[in-house]
Picture (cartoon, rainbow, N blue to C red):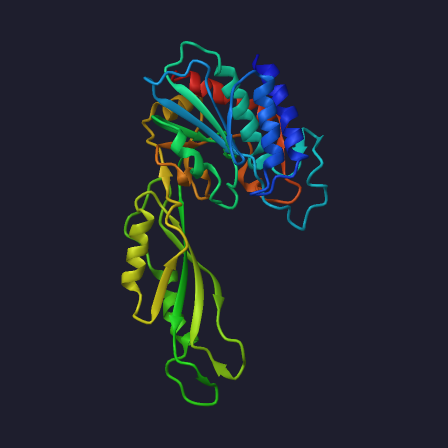
Length: 354
């Protein structure tokens, strides 16, 4: 059964690759996922472009395992030499946009869920969610349907980790920082130049270190990624705007980091967070699902990249076939053998706790 499901999962991945599914435009891949459930006689539900299904013998008295991966993609970058929507296999690699991030994970989880779907002896319920708008953290993605899932004990989020166990993930806090000054003609003296005022602010973001360091995720990392000021060569601007990207470890909530930054800024600086929702996430290394993976030779680590884990409020493990370094790259690919290993290991790891 595992071999058959894996073969069908790889066939589905071919179809997903060849169907455009940019964030907020996933309606056609949503239909392909519906077709998978229909073919396997599994009832499902859909809201916008999110599709989910429960195991056949769902029992309200049991806790639930949430399986999740996304079916949207970024747009292909300009360095592609292959057709990003042409799924083809060469030297054991399946090429195409979304093959690695996160198509291979999604189809492997669909095969895994289908494998367990009709089991009567499960210790847990299962719900699988193929979610939309992950790549752009959109409002109609996973977060919009979490209200339907009750009693979730933990989640497995399918992202490429080489099937190693990402037991923690950094959160994301993006800030718009406005430094005020006094506008004037460039020919006249001005000791309140907004651009000059921004220099110590930039230096603070570069040098400040948050006290709490995580064993799995390291330090909170703050990076000034954009700066904008002035429109004419002979006018000192009244303001200078920065964008700061902050990767938050699991020792802090985004609100706590925001408060520290605000306290450290001078009065001429205004801070506006774009969102406080994309928090860090983690699962205990003593959790049974982690122990099950470790018993199968898997290693644990902390992930610096963001996923749909950030909207979950339950313990979550990031785990999936493929390599994160290939995500969003030109001529994206995943090895066929990685998908085969992914299905097999998902099943073995879950069988270790159910």
